[in-house]
Length: 400
Ligand code: ACO
Image (cartoon, rainbow, N blue to C red; front, top):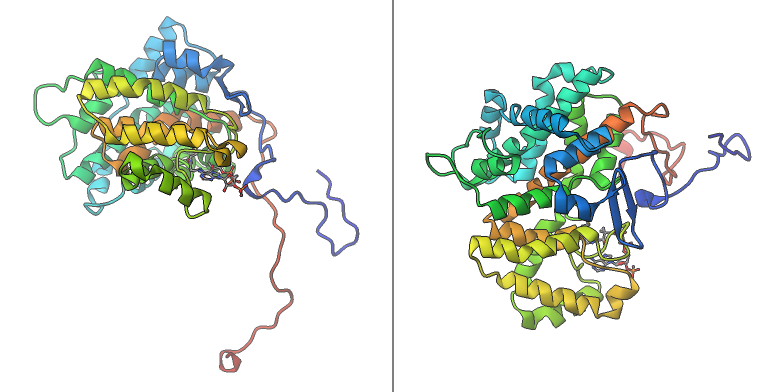
């Protein structure tokens, strides 16, 4: 784009768009969102159909390769992922070096970045075979890293992958297996977790995907680019919101305290976590699907959730309240996921790593698409400079 300058000193025409609310950073054919209508489609297929009929690994293939796999392609894909779940023993030792109370997301961020040093050939980003094997490794190893981070937080020995189980079943085994023989996952929990992963699989240019693209635009290996995505996901306004929702519900503590809490939100003292979205100005379709699995998981784990009662009442009141409806604030994907994770006995600090596992194929798909983009340029935004100009250096003995 040519800059319009009025004179030599002028920096030219710039768009100033904090948070990039109105800036398209790329062309993409992966995920379609209509935020006003609450529509989400991957490669054109509605999320409701994928959650109902597909599996997380099939959706991963769809995101990466643009079409649903036929039976042979799916079998080969599942086989490949299943046989790349192990991580190098030094990665295990690397993770053992963290403090006992290290945040699992911090551990995940560091260990995903560390993968780049174990697969230096991944830097050959123009080679399609390398890209493919990097995608396989990233999707296969993310649950192993996430489970190691969880076991570290619990002070438990690591459990090696069981490649005879499904993707989700193996992850549950790595989290919860206590003794031989094999861990047998409850099929209801296995299914619900698979659906949760599908619902998190991609969401176009969100903060973490944008971070992957920005870091990836300087052409590092994909593991380094994905580590940038994990960092973007970490914060409470993005993936960390599921932790913040649960802590919020615990703090509210009882249905009786909801009116006072909502008043605090309206007074601007805090946010109603799990509500609001940059793109959805309607009920997030993913939140609706997750909600439909909450009761099933509670039944499978034989749990009563006090927090569920608070969440149901809080949602009802917020949806009846002009403050929230006038700002088009509706529940997002994180509102209900924490209740499911809690019912599955996953500690609160590990919720965001669950999101990271689900989002991994989306990050890889965004990165792969960018690698093939003939218009790819290094991400290098401009700024509106507001600081001093042509100031003199002041020697130390003359400073105040
Ligand atoms: N609670 C209370 N008020 C809110 C909330 C909320 N959760 N979200 C937005 N608002 C209000 C803002 O105060 C603002 O009000 P105003 O017009 O009176 O100033 C208005 O709604 C618009 O809010 P913005 O901050 O401009 O919206 P933005 O698009 O920048 O933020 C975000 C989106 C970050 C998701 C925001 O809604 C939020 O903080 N939500 C809570 C955190 C959360 O749930 N994050 C998860 C998002 S989904 C995901 O990452 C998978």
